[in-house]
Length: 399
Image (cartoon, rainbow, N blue to C red; front, top):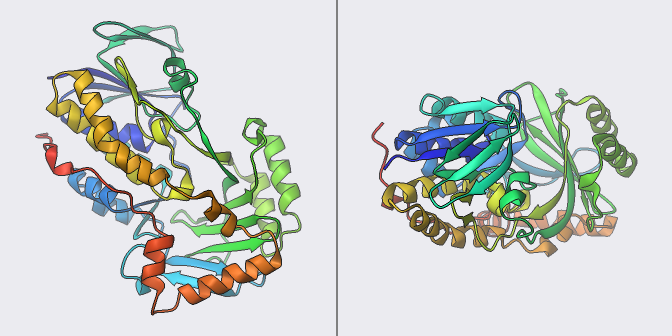
């Protein structure tokens, strides 16, 4: 049964859903707020069932080829010496750095390039209104045009405006007491293939991570209760980070200088999306708009890929759309709830407020990185593997 489907959002979740639905033979249109495809963004990783989904799509090898080449994670001192290190080559399974580390934009672009031969893309357009009816949903776009669809999939971000049009006030966010600014800076000769994590007193951390584009991906993080900073404009947000990290030490001055000139500054107060339902009539949520677990969970890309596969698979198995959406939620919610089960105390432990706390953190990680216990510690405490649905239920597309 072919359906006319609209997907709002052309990042990982939206493009993955488009790939599956287009190949199942549905009439799919993807809209995106940006005027052209956005291929920027920071490091994400794909683990476990997420890798299984990519293999079913025939894209796992290509994703590995586009990976960042990150070789492990190191916690460093102010002089850049390593206090503790988890190297990929020494671990039996994924640790804080997964085998498949890739930039968000590079994964989204891979999915987009593979999906666009089967679906239509429209850039520079958003949804202004959705009127759900008995047989379809009538959508009014930002350009004034209106169309009807059998299903509307909202695959936007954590702050999805379209979600609020349909599920107004239903999101009960869980605030994670962590504010992060992500951006790209020029690569330095001292930058290597490690994710280098530096802690400064006051619950602050700085990260530098490699990419394959000749640049370095940086972030500033502050562990504290949110106070609406996500609503500030970019100038205020940069000034805030500049003030908070000017005395942090390590490479803070270099990174602040790079932040001032970057063109991809992204600032967010971390919070999970908690929805009691993911569908209403002919509208369904997927990806971060439905369940954002935050980067702290390390499962965002894996959940997006798996969610797209499950949603498309249930629509293929069920002629009744309502039954398909119910089955999608039933199959995926246990995985989402497991992925969101991130204890907030972990954020505080990884962002000590005193020099003594930093010393204790480094000492603990150093002991945990020793050969006798590093695999157990990395898999138990530094890598979150959520429960996954049975993908074998879903047929492979014929085209």
